[in-house]
Image (cartoon, rainbow, N blue to C red; front, side):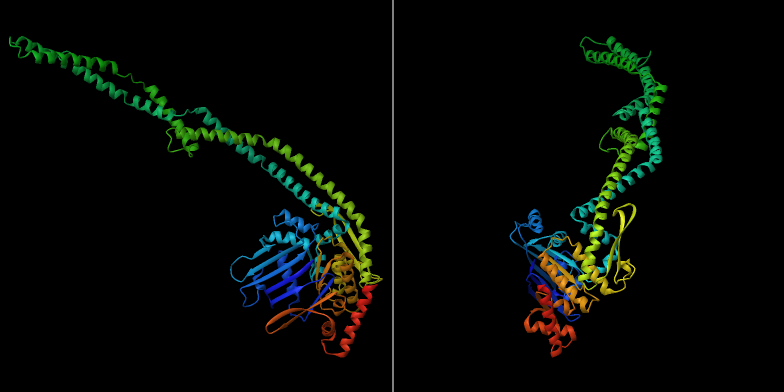
Length: 564
């Protein structure tokens, strides 16, 4: 249960510290004094949105801290240990700090930083809050289903979650199958394109390094005719009759004839003879090097390069500029990827078959679970109706009739039926949908009865924020009696924010919120102070002797009712 609550800088509350006992606790005060801010403070501890507008004017931040006592067997203790917030120690301390500037809000659990999600998980195990607009939830079809499932038991509530998940999964499987089928025509067009591209690349059958080699061969062929002409001309000048070789040899012979006994020309004659021989060798070498031009081969090389260039323009965009064979690698890589995509697309037939089986099995599983849930709901209807009628009788609505209607419908996330609540508030009235009940007081009591009857929370603290709106007289006393019964039969700590003295009189502990020019404060009231507060609530005259008599009478009546 919530043992201590500290609120600092929240709304009109400058600072408030509450030490809270067990049982039924009433929180009262003038309208606008700040009663609901206590509920807002609890909301921050339970993971509600950190609204900066809640910060007290002039304050830099708002801080809320709460200390809860929990047993080692409590679900919150196990969750904290699992989440790494320490071993169970009998208490949980939660804090939330909201800043007026742009700094993000801070949350701590047992002194350690926690996420808002963790606060929400822990909070739902520690506190159950029923707001002042609790009856408005009854207009929501999902809320009505959840109430019936909660009353039907843990199995029904768990099965409802499974049904929701299964229906979502089945819808996803069906959507996937639909998408696969709708994509068949697109798949065929893509396959046609990919197969054409793969065939075009395969037809060329490019090899790594081929472009460079072909360019070299083309360059050789393109220069062959000019080279042959140059060699022929050089050979003619060197080796023809009267050419360079003959002229050099003639020069050597002339010098040979004029050579004297002193050998003056011998060296020159030798060199000329060697030159003539070298010229002859060069001519022979040139003759051997003369190419044989092949125009047809050159045309073939050029055609091959042109075919590869076309592929490169289409499929070689991802070439590696640092590689000599980058273009060939890019083209081959494109082909590999295209072949992989073809394999994927060709496998879609198998994928469609598997998706059909998945959609069928998902739908079947969802329907089977929904049918089981329907059976649990149907079995719980009469018990829920009897329980609510009994509670309404205790809430001064004797003779009221409550009927749960189940309307079959196609499978959806909520199961195979819609749930509606019909109420006849007075004997002889025709039952009508709960959303058509006119009286706010009746709606509040019906909502309270449903909350009491269907509460599955393990939380040891239950908060009711003005759920008694529109209620008065004997009905208000009935609400007070129901709340104190809830606290005593379940052992829960029940905190009620109320404006009704008949409800506050049943409280085991009473706190009053007051406001002056400096802000709001929260103080416990008992004895004469409690009589004064109840007098104020009864007649707005806390000093009135008659109002005080009525207040004392209320306390006596509440005490006697509590003992029964």
